[in-house]
Length: 371
Image (cartoon, rainbow, N blue to C red):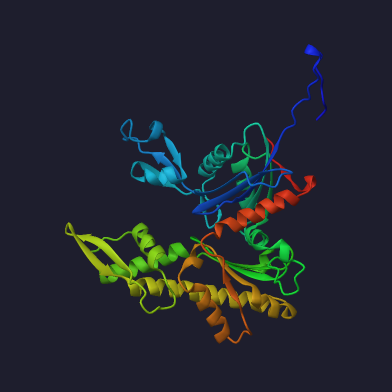
């Protein structure tokens, strides 16, 4: 931008340079993670987890019930006032399912990040299996919020987010960007992906629509079969699963107890067996997919690959999941597998990796969003 001067008062001024805001976005089916920084600066300006949900007010809501009598709420506020809203999740299986709702949610993100007056460039994680339609829908949703974007497969961003640059010269360090296998267990799908120094292709990954939501339904069906009068719902089962899920029985582990109302009276029921069965089904599916993808890898890379099996996503928080998956790989005959679970802050890694890509990207790598 050219400098301009003013003779007024004998003081020369320079025209302000537009600041570029970089955004790393993990746009998740249930939770979205965002991180921002100013281009050329190190500090993280903003990081936040936002429930990926939009709530539309029911027509009969009384004045003063919703904050500011809003007709639409987002994220945690939408969940807080869910009884007076129609909740819609814009994504399904990691890709946009409702473009209008996704567009509204993207604008909400823009307001959270204070993108006004700044050129805003976003690197957005996409499922490795997403097609051209999914990418075009994402472009349409964020147009007007971000001026430039790059779409990158989520497993690669996760590997980049996990990567410890300070140890790259350490001969004992297993670089997840060069050779790792990611097992991502989300709400709508299990995605298993090879990351071997390049953006994963369709051949490098497997995806099945069998994950957290399917397990919730399995557990609910089993509970209702034994306790048909319990009146439990999927949302209540999800809460129980998140608190009590396990795949390895532990001595002294607290049983999964649900409090239900039967005939207006509170009753406690033990649903440990049902929760365990659902989680075991999820583990078996993740194991089968991991085994299949390992068989596709170059045999010369498998030994190192097995030392970098990384489990992420909400399903990874099931107690004992990583240990159990490693045990299954050992039982299958794989040599010295090492399974690592990213932990409760797993959502940060895709966004962090996306921000790293945004910092490194050349100007000709950005896609400009017109209109």
